Image (cartoon, rainbow over all chains, first blue to last red):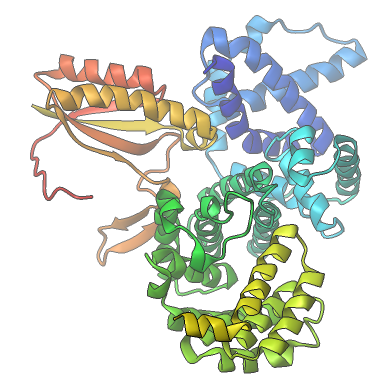
Length: 423
Length: 122
């Protein structure tokens, strides 16, 4: 491991705070990013020799600001440049700045930086790309790889998003309580999108895309450190951790999706599960429920079950019921029906999803679940129709392959006589 | 004499390590720990989950539970070791070895007054 790798980690961890502060100062994203870049270049020169500063973010903010101001001066040909010596000797100034940063500003700085990335006019994919570029500091190449698009296409997407944001007029005053809460929930939604972008990968791309999940977790933890007592942010972080804990078990060696019931639970990441459960535990004490907390609580019940048959489906059914109230959607009802079928049988599940048909007529999972219920009820012909429809609607080859497995099982079951005799 | 070696580091920084960096640190630490264990000098070792998972009970009247760690500082308590050492010099040496393996911010070395090993927890 080289020194530069450690400096990279230090620069990455300081980035949101540093760019957030520079953005408040310059009120322009490009200028802030450029100032940060310049500060990083100086850091790469100075830190290996002088050792890293005690507060890297404060150092980068101060240097970034000075360099940018010098640039303006130089353009005006007014003042001579300060030499590097002066810049690396920042201890006193850094200390003072660090103390001011410990005040209230940095929280809103980082929140603002995240918030401008989730501007309402930006389509979800652009929001995510922009956040990964600006806040996380991933290179365009890395982001393009995770999104499975060309570098040129991603470059264009980010440039377009930045232009939109530049016109957006984000207010720079310290936000009021209501405004802050709105920003927080928009940012949480965006972090969830980043996670899903990585989580919904198929087997052959899961590894390439899993950095998206890890980055989302890092951002969720960052947000939670800024807003320590927000139960929904605890819920968000818990949800992401609990889902990602299963990553190693979600695909088999051939890249086929492995359903929860069939996963090798020894592959689940226990420290992540422990952290997720600790967070949801803490969140529930606030008695201010919300969609992330409920989903995390469901994920925690799955994580707690050492074997699939230990799963507390009654509790999960209740939690989906609560989710239906705070966030009604046919997809939630579909999930609830799966839990209900485990408690009250496939007929109950089927009755629950039947009214959803008109709204989910193009939804892969609807037909997958419907087929499974019908199969359990022994209505094989109808099950086959549902499974065929599911395959036609599959988003990934892994999804289609999974349904084909059910169909194969149906085929086997419908050549019944020999099987029974053989027994 | 038993000493507690308390590990302080910038949590944001540790959280930005790549899996490889984290793994390399843990591997190097394991070597130091193994030596101590062989000499029968290593007691409990803990790596704490992120401070975001912490809660603090303030013993006010009545006591209140707050989210987050007790102290909001630039560096956070991220773990600890209990080590058997003859004197402070030896404890500092152990901390130094650990520090080479893990370039953290600081180790606080505190002599232990009362030690109850408790059950062998898993």
